[in-house]
Length: 214
Image 1 (cartoon, rainbow, N blue to C red):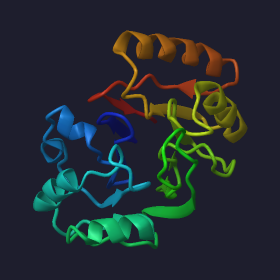
Image 2: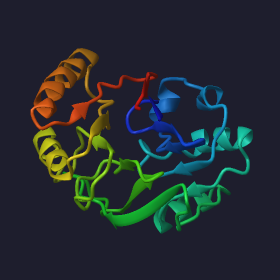
Image 3: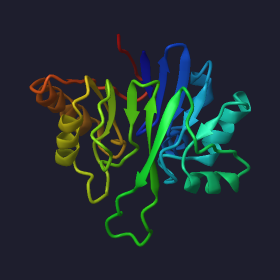
Image 4: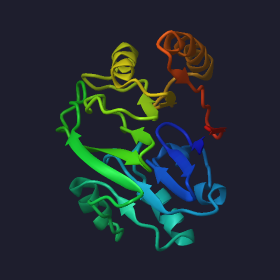
């Protein structure tokens, strides 16, 4: 299995002959990355929720120009918003990914209400939770763990507690775009040491980098 990180929560997962893209958001535009140039094949796109850092209609349209038949999976909220852009979204999973939709945590200090957040289990191997920590403690070989978010449950202590409860074999960090590089890489090292004490391998996956997991 190969996992590539494209900023923040956007991961490309290649496993068992399938390729899945999760959460192509607006930071890809800010970094001026032509995402489709980095993808040679694509079997599914998953979008955890409607917030712009996880869902950029412009990025999705650019991907669909190269892969017009690729199915997109998410919840009814995302389906409605992308439908306004002429993009079709499916709300039922398939053999590649299963979907579990939960309520999103409230954003501190902002008036917008919580939105649905979809948890993806990809090829029964990777659990991608967007930026919510309110997901069931179901086992996963690889957990894409959000490290920072402005939610009621969104600090790094709560993230590590949740990861220990899930007890994955590997952790890939996501949702950390707002951290400065020196701070982020320093925390990666500390998290690696911390999780090693719990027999969990933390993979310090940086932006535009890939990791092979046997």
